Length: 156
Image 1 (cartoon, helix red, strand yellow):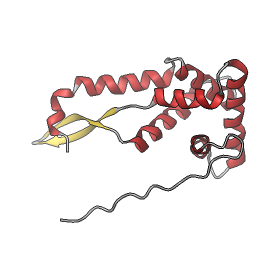
Image 2: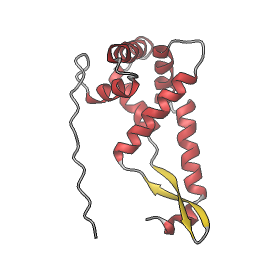
Image 3: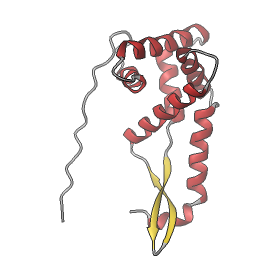
């Protein structure tokens, strides 16, 4: 039986403005084609808009919003005897964060008529308040897992 190698967690350098690894992660997720300065302008612009509109610290808003966006369970297809079942499985922390950031970026891009920075700020403020497109997507994922709880014994 093959032994699995233990995953080594790479530490990410905190961003220079807020000294936060999470902000650095959001910037890296936002970055496309190696344009980090553009990604920084978008994320810092969004955090600036949050600071203007909310009384809370923008980093606290970001942390709570991303925590609200994270899915706890998802469904994975599992083939058993010619039938495919949607099996609910718990998600580890890294995948939760990756899914939350991916959904946030997709929802921000889907907002037409506003800049990416403003769209990201609006999505984060909506998620902070427990509403918006990303929260709806997370709830749909949880609902799907709840509906297929009967197949949980097929989890691997």
